[in-house]
Image (cartoon, rainbow, N blue to C red; front, top):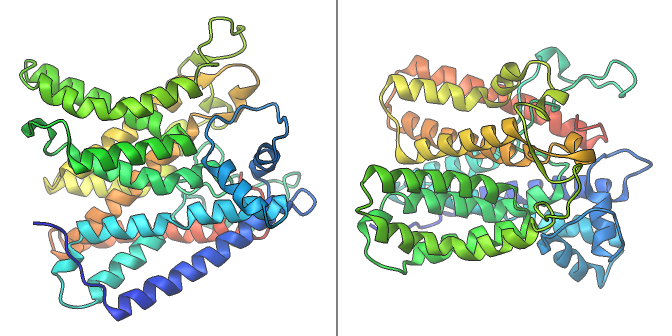
Length: 408
């Protein structure tokens, strides 16, 4: 049955109010990051402003969406303001995408009241403030970097890195790409067609996500390739036609990726450039206890997974979210960029996408299990409590960013 939904007045007002608050808070942050205020509000937005103006930054940014948008705003405002508006614009589309897929998953259209729609709205915005866990004694405290700095992010990472503009610009495209492919996995082998509207929507979303920042795409392509090849081989190649009927929709993105990474694998590259392989080579620079870092970063989805396994309640979407997370974890654990980029840990962006989607799907599963009373009350309370801890830390972390503290 097609998804149909009537938006109630209360739901519309709730979404509009939260969207206004979210846009105001994030635009304030992005503006401060762009202007910098004497070195405070650390982020990577400085080189992006220079790139937007055509200056030589020494970096390669073969993902043009954010920079082209910034140039549009540049026609009527200052460079720093133009970039802040561009980031706020793309980042501000993410709540719409999340709301749509939360509504579908929770079957908001089946409810005759606005309560489920309002719940979907609250969950959609809450996931944008969830963050890694850290000691509760850190709450409300902040020290300058030279004075016993309290590390929160470094080595653990967050599903919401508000210091990375291109991650935020790509996210409104990555959300539909992720959920559309999860949907396609449920039927593509049973279809005998080269075209399907969902194939086209997925392909377009993935292409746009790649043109905004390829970190999400690298993880999704790895995940999709492994899943589809495993199905093909385990089915004794009987579904080879379906494999290609779906696979061709990756071609536009593959062509863009070849352009984006042409310098990385160029035969003339020196020994200190390109991609390196080594177990925890980059990650170990930022954490001396990586299992603990993973636990602090993914405590909520791990808790939801545990109780879903105990209750034998796994779903295709939940499975896919963990397959995606595993791929993101492995790329961070084994891949790194050589030379001066080693410390940049650029494969961590894919891992943070893995965190984001594991949080999102886990929250969807928990909300549905709560609404349908699929699990005992004590199990639900534990899961909501862990999520609440992530929100408390996330709100504190966002406060630090708003006040100009380091994201580390």
